[in-house]
Image 1 (cartoon, rainbow, N blue to C red):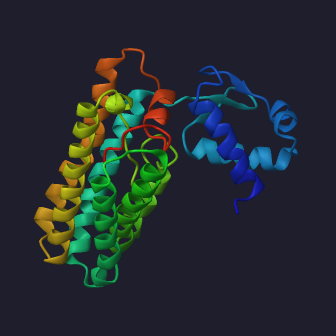
Image 2 (image 1 turned 60 degrees about the horizontal axis):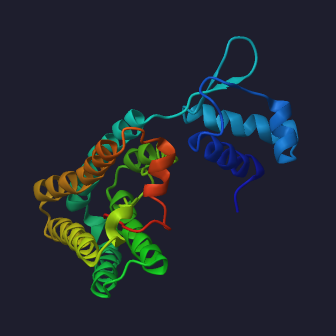
Length: 252
């Protein structure tokens, strides 16, 4: 269970990312205390968390001001995470401890395959797929043997599409049977990449593991750019919707 300050930081972060505050507006400790029915101590601790995340900054004099993330920020962070995951895949392939994590990765691949074969993308299916995807990706981060890789990934995981195993959803996928089939095909392709990454790590092929993870991770960048072209007014809040478990289409 999260502490009061962590839970409060989660609420304020949610409001910032969803555009509840205007850029540069001053955050009032007193107003936050009243709005969330808490004392000043958890508010101050929560604000320090958000400052470390770059969502607020100290203004002139006392207090903090909003520094909302942009689409460009998300793209940059996704690129960083892609490089870190690629490095993690390479390091895991060389690690003697990988055997402890390979069974969970293999099971995650099988779970996703079974869900795709069911041919539907309702909310329970998406949540199960998302959970399996998270197991696959966190296993690589945990097994790579470099604590700073996972640590750095955690520092940006509060942003939309940056949590371990995040998935992208295209809401257009259920507009027709053809669109659904296209979505399922992309899922199969993503899980086929999982299989190549798994086999490369298991066979101690660090170069192939790194290359395939780089290709796999870049898909997230491609989808954000696709959504931008589709909607010139795309917001960070929209990206939250595209990565939510209640959306219609996950891209691994």
